[in-house]
Image (cartoon, rainbow, N blue to C red; front, side, top):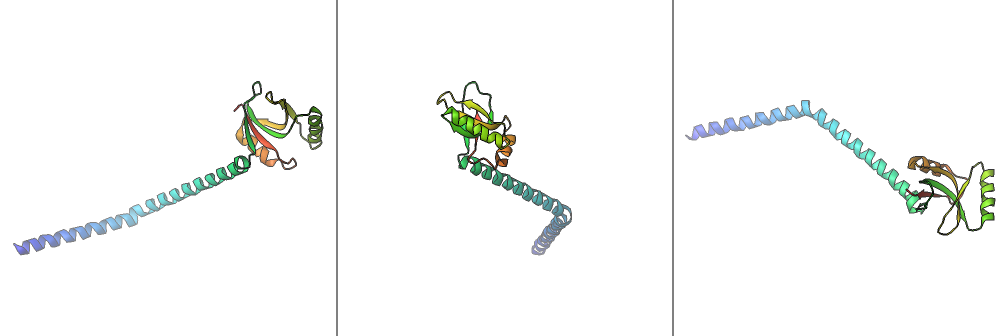
Length: 152
């Protein structure tokens, strides 16, 4: 009886070893390339996600962190992202600033905020955030501009 049990145990151990070898072979030659491809794809996705997160963080620091974006609700004004170059309480200053911007090659426009009656001079407006933000980043010759999200 003891010999029978040892023989069965030996067969069982042999079968387990054979199964382990089969699994190792299957992994090495059949599954490993697929697993490596999945790992690489996961790494690529993670890298892309980190890159997007870095871009978002940079955008937030550039705009939100520096208080360069302002949100307004102004009745009667079309919604959009406005690149605001200056704000004036005195109309003659608005006119002088608009002329300065025209000399720089811009086509400035003005809206008046009804709550404070100040005149806001802007050089660009778009309903599209990406277009507005790209344009905002490209303006180098006007200091201290703001990107206003109006009625958005």
